Length: 505
Image (cartoon, rainbow, N blue to C red; front, top):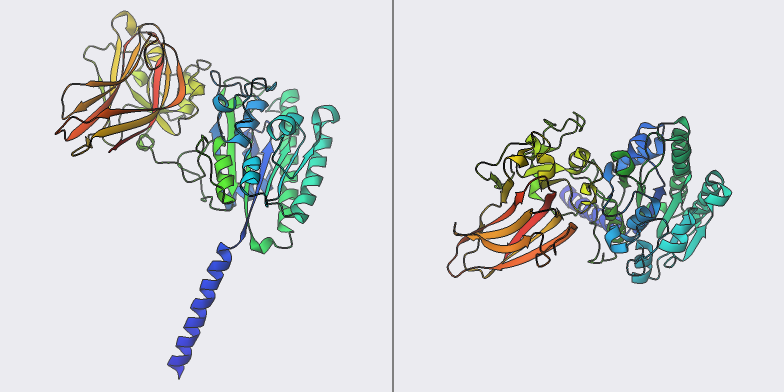
């Protein structure tokens, strides 16, 4: 009899567990994204901001970097457009706070996309920088609360935004909400990011965030809801105040996220602010459009370059000693091959190198390295411009270096497809080439960059462009290697490559 009761109890327990799993899976998804204008990540995390830190403990916080010269200045119009549309400025075309020439009609906000996909969703925005409401969020919300912080003062209007958002989050369906606070940016402009006034506004931001989170927790059906909370910023600030330039402090932004399917802990490869929109849509059960530049958090494809082990500076003394950021040791079967007799220059750039944004952009700010926005984590760079900065090697010869892929089996296949992110600046006689070699045979041209208008770059720059090409497999071929070569270069520009993918069909 005890066995029968034990079996019955076990069945009941399993049934209860199954019901509990189903109930958890059935929780209603809700999203709150909070924007802090001009909030520098390092200052936010160093400040007395307990609500932000508690949120980070539940999920994670990661510094990220904006674009820069060549794509857009580090100002609010491009920043908030990027966060809300999920695409970089070269797509939404917001290049200044004037919003002149924008293409936001083709790239609506994630609130509008969610509303279109599921009109039953309750969508809401509360902002006090009016261009966000007038330009970026002109349509696509069930309710929009807009105040003018420029005229009334952001300390006053941030409070009004918080009051309205608290009421909304506590009482309404509140399926998808965006709430913006602006006073930290004003403190940055007036006093600088190193000031006590700037730190004080970060504490105020944290208190406002705490009120919003408390409103969420006070909801009548909170236990049946699955809340995704995200926080980000449109740009940073210099120590003395201001933004718009290419310094690491002005380009500094971040992604803080907790809840939903967001993995806990700091990610190995930092997310980008374009990842906010697809993360929100995934949580709401809405398919992200193919045009998005971002990925839902945790869903970015793997990249073999990210396994490279980076080292501190050697010749690049302008880079802080603590910034790890270069190696010539190619990962995952890749190789770097320099031409015989190529003169020696700056060690870090003696041929193709593997680097990251924080290191590479510090070597020579303001030369459009910052516009390499679609690269993530570690990427490959051939940089004769920096190579020539030690001993003028271009006076003794040319830069000529090749980055060679591992072999790929093409037995019985007809076509090799290759894709990568290409960030290339043309100057002088410099040339770039993508070639394919089957079974160790001669190189076949796949893609060519150069000064002529008939080249793939049309004689000019190619800034952070997803690039693809195909090459036919010769009959009987068994393997192929692809080579990215930068050559005939002196004190010219550079070629950066990321996320190479090779498939056969």
